[in-house]
Amino acid sequence: MAISLSKEQKQTQNISITPQLRKSIELLHLSRYELIQKIEREIETNPFLEKNEYEISDSSLNSIDDFDFEYAASENLKSSLISQINELNLSTSDYEISELIINSIDETGKLADGLSEIEEMLDFKYSTKSIEKNLITIIHELTPPGVGYRNFKECIFLQLKKSSIPPAILKICEKVLYEISSDDLDECFNKLVYEGYKDEDIKIAIKSIKNCDLSPGLNYEETNFIYPDLKISFEEEKMSTKFVSDNFPSISLDEGFVKEAQNALKKNPNKDLSSNIEEAKWLISSIRRRNETVIKVGELICNRQIEFLGNNPLKVSPLSNKDISDELGIHPSTVSRIIKSKYIDTPKGIIPLKSFLVSSVSKTRMVTPIQLMDQIKKIIDEERSPLSDQKIVQILNMRGFGLARRTITKYRKKLNIPSSRNR
Image (cartoon, rainbow, N blue to C red; front, side, top):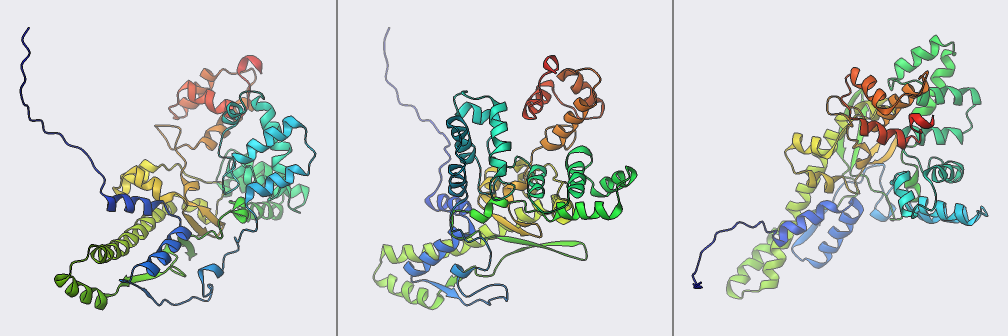
């Protein structure tokens, strides 16, 4: 068989990221604090950038190091929790479990990993039941109140348990959070009145729920300060979302110096000088685009979660990266970068934007995992004889949920409810 050599031309398309695009993407990742630090460094090193004077509001101070939010960190959350368990004289097994749970807690105080994931990280030495027992009896007793929470309802109840509210009020709070299936507070109020509870006690309970901190761990955040990019306010029941401009450096191009430099560069080209001019222009436009995108994403999230932000901490609507990207016409990865390390100042405290993203577990209706678990628990609590996961699916699908059996199994296990055979 003869071998012949021949030349062939082939046309292919490759996607390449330019250095400037790569830097723009990295800029989206930065928290407000990190971005301010970067801007300050650029002003010092790039002669073509100048810092504009900006007005200082009554609520802010003269320096970013004196930022008037109460989240200065004397120690970070995890080191504080480790210090606390060191004082408890725990057994070796309890300490091992507690330490890993603490390492699975994010900056807000939420348990970021599921119990089954922690079980796997512990090489299956301990069951999910033992891990949950440790979480409830040890971690949930630590300071700040609410730390180690798995959802907002648990976060609220843990804080209420450690507060000074009377037992009768706490009981009403528990019913609102766990026993009444509705997340409409007006409906909860009416049901409790019907059950015979006093109007005034119910109002105190609901007010106590609304006053809880939904990000208890931020008091111990490791960075020097938590800087919210956005702030929401309510005026006459209308919500507005604004970019926090206080203490955010305003920069511009020193046009006079740029013109002088460009005239000089015509006679004596200098790559470093030309690069500095382009870098200055890029930074100004990139920061503007970054902030505009943060506002757009933040406004959309707040409008979708207006009930939660307004007057109902139990009402978190399903919302995903894809929902935001589809509505704003940007890539889902851009949304992921935008919400990373970004915070919003709300009437309920400073909350990470990522906390508002909750995917729907159903394709036919908007249902959050918490809402589904509430439904599953209610069905099982009311069962006369043990119902299989398939039976639970049938009940929920008759209500229009459109779920698969494996979804029910997954969330039943998250509730640590045994199968029908073992109930």
